[in-house]
Amino acid sequence: ENMMMQRLRVVFPVLLVVLLAIVAAAAAQSPAPELATTITVNHSGDDYNDGYSTKCSDVSPFECTLRRAINEAYVAGDRPVYINFDIPITDPGYDAVLGAWTITHSGSTLYDLRELNGQTFLDGTTQPGGRTDGPKIVIDGQGNKNNGLILRNGNNTVRGLAMQRFKNSHITVSSDGNTIWDCWFGLWYDGTTLSSGDDTVPEGGSGVALATGSDNNNIRDNVFAGFFETAAAIRGNSN
Image (cartoon, rainbow, N blue to C red):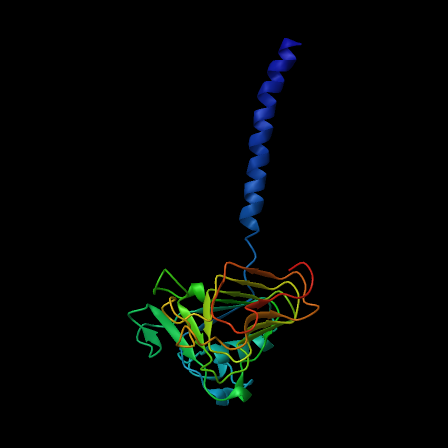
């Protein structure tokens, strides 16, 4: 019996080493899945004439604006789609004092951005450099746009953006399984005053509005300030 126990003490460690080697080899042969499509915004400009059609792939490689990136993402066949940012400090939208880049929407209420069309990850934290005490990417509707972003077809993520001066909702959610986090709504660039320009004048519309029937959405770690309507209108189930 003692001899059997000694043999078992030798065999078990050997089997464990072999098992761990097999697992490691399998992990090496099966890399983590990568996002299917990546689009990089590298210019703060906005041309409302681009409408819903002009994409980043239609213009110079150095003129990929947010509007064009969203148009590209909308029709992408391979999803999910990851929209990141890499705007240089030489860009006219860069504020060296604040360490932030502002994307100012052009045109009237007829020229809102196209919707995020499902499985789209819009992440302002991917912008290199800039400040560390607030969102680096600011989206300014100038009070001329009804809506900022509209999330449709589910599983979209918006992260690390500062959104200001939209007439209705800064972000409208009309689908399931979306995430909005680490964003500012209604704050001015410096994060200390209201984007309306006066602490006694409220921001238009709502920060985030979830439509009835929009379920299982995650709204967290955001900052809302100065709205005359509900800052975050949460409808639906399990939000």
